[in-house]
Image (tube, helix red, strand yellow):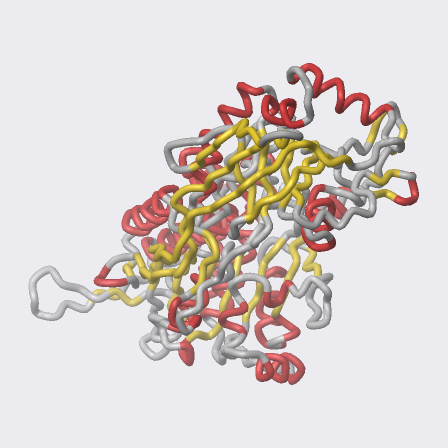
Length: 561
């Protein structure tokens, strides 16, 4: 930094000890502070944000609030100004939700002469048993239990485990895995995955719900159920009260539930879990011979739920620009810091969805950019316009935090020059990894909204990291509709030009395996440096990037705001 002259003008006002500093706003010199964005910083803070102790940062949860405090403490440490409620970093808001007090499962065996209760499970914050919800199940349901093997029909391979049964007044009992490969033979088509199987049963049958036979030992199942029962009674069906006119989302009526190995063996008239494992192996060996069969058991399911209020918060930090005429205008840097919490265990038994990439990566990116701006200001450099660092909650439940901010902005929307959103920027998607091409970032927004904003980002890239700017998804007609699937949309709908920085969906998306060890830190660092450089370019731009794509204007005008 010694090759640059730092000029500090001190204007003494007559009050002892007071001074006013005039900052150097040179774009070239501010871009040098890109070097302050380092892998070590990103790793240090991402390790905290994605740690198990934050329990997946589910909206309104203890872990989410721990993350909010961590962010506020960081911005305090670098002397950024709070822009939340009552001179804090927090913008609080309430969400309507469905709150579950407890869930009761009662299983009966129906004999020729009588009906015998064989199991009674109560799931709550402090109790669990031989059933535990995975997702859904907002309505009471009861019916016979039908065993459907692996729960798939694969016509091309002659597999009909679901048969042609409509499952009216029935629960579908299936093993919780899909045996795609055995001894090199593809048993079930690879496209029939877990999401396909669940969606097919819930959408195309009249089943009361799905019962998954746990593939873990009884002890492992019990260990998981203790944590999963707490997650099952977390609030669901979130909405912003002022947008709902008193209506509340009720959630998915049908549900998916885990069943303990011991109870599953009982329902299938087996002596123990050893015979249950043998049955599964036999099904794989004779996979084309199986057809669904009604058991002698009946399940009554009752959730005790009602309306409730969940309190959560966005985190807002302010870095004031140096230009007296432009500092009232701002670039909004945003990232959601919530994730999906605790849920169904993966094959390792892990139930905490750490969300390292989604969206720990975007969250910590903003922290790194803030630190670089702080260090620049300490050395006498600042951009002309201000920057609002906006960490939003409730993205995973419907972009509700960004919607709340955009409806209650602390900086007038007309003074918001542009918005940059960082969401999942720490990895590469499988297709690009296969091609050996990982030095890219997807740009969404930009040219399909504002040619001026796009030009500034392209120039920033040329002047900094020079990554490949991939516009694969930058199409208003693209089936993925990424241009309106993350928090930037709540600015775009109001006519604020945006760029969404994104590196793709991967196999660990919304799974417990989205962990810090999967992050490509070399690439991640470069993406963050690009966002910093783009911020400087827009903050120092003489004009304002305008929304100039008529197709985008027409689309937003047709959509409800």
